[in-house]
Length: 411
Length: 107
Image (cartoon, rainbow over all chains, first blue to last red; front, side, top):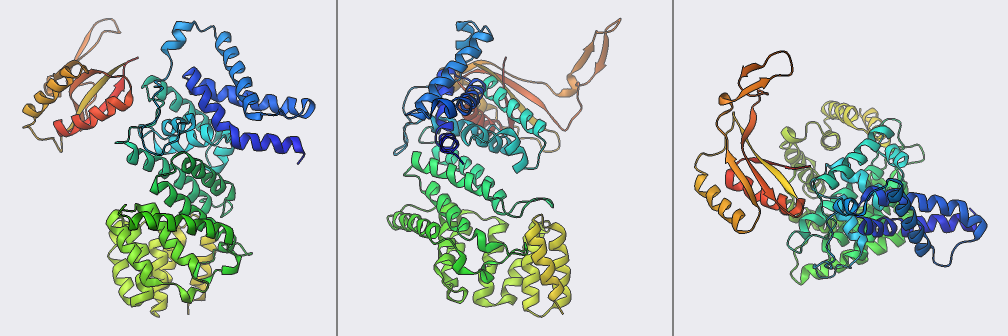
């Protein structure tokens, strides 16, 4: 990559959200902001190789995008008063939550992740407006048709305008729920990269996990005092650290227990552990941790063990007990049972897993967990049936390959 | 910005019938805080008549335009600065009415 191309890529990563956010504030319209930002970057691609990279790329891009937006407004011959009427609700009051940085990007994120928008819409809008991914890129990532995705984004922008979804950081009172809505969007993006679904997809999508981490870092910079933001970032880093060890050269999933721990990314683990320690200190001071912080702590226990045999399972179980109190979902109960198996044996764990049948019968991991426990108990026939069911339900190619091998190894 | 706020009831699982005092108190508050534009409860859907006069002569049919388990039981019109304010009030309204609420902006 040439120096100019590199500068453009860097500017896109660093400045896209800033340009869109500033233009949205100025023109009160996401559509105008998105289009003008895209045009400004296209102009940079055209001009920078000949004119050289401007000394302040961000300012150049914002100025250029502003000009493009004004051109469009003139072109559409919008009268000034009519344009004002269409503006989004924006108040100049800096956000009240302690520790929040007054940055238009924060407003942009909360608008894109508004609870009045469907989850898939929030994901698409956030990746487009904040992440700067193109429509074809997002469509490819989620295996949807470009036209369908384009329609979804267009409808969302129309709803934001028609229903007056505000361009604002929520009040301190609403902030925890709204932040958790934003984090749910980012976690979904991360998980799709970490365990991609679809028979023709690569089992890992590092582009998606990287994007989710980048956006979570941005939110962490904007909301430095939010414990769940730190927790989610730590969880992502500790998971991402194991990425290369998670799929074998043959394209098969490698479970945590069997992974080559030397292949884990030590820098990511160190950063994740630092964040977990920061949250543990806060918890010790009486701040109750939320689910992402507890999940991060569980991952910190796993990534602290140099050898699988050194895993502190009683610590893992204690954290799951804490997690169940915050989030009593059957999936958490299923994962807790895996820790139970290590401490109290597969028989006790199997009884706990079987109790989840009504809720998880359609979930591949439920059957995969049962299959493994039954295998350890020497109940081959039942184990085989559970593997069959898990293979049928699993959507990830590496996971299917792993389950198939385990099933075929049964005697 | 005005929003149409619809109260949705469910024939197979109706909300409780003792909500009127709470709704009245909520209305008083909406008026005092400047959100209230209009409110009204609706008679049963059986009392509805649909009129279609797009053809040669008006055709009247007995009953609502759409037979469904869920139906419109009442409406408000609120004046609110943005959707966040309207949604917050709607969340309260749902509790007060013991029914689902739809919020839809006027054009």
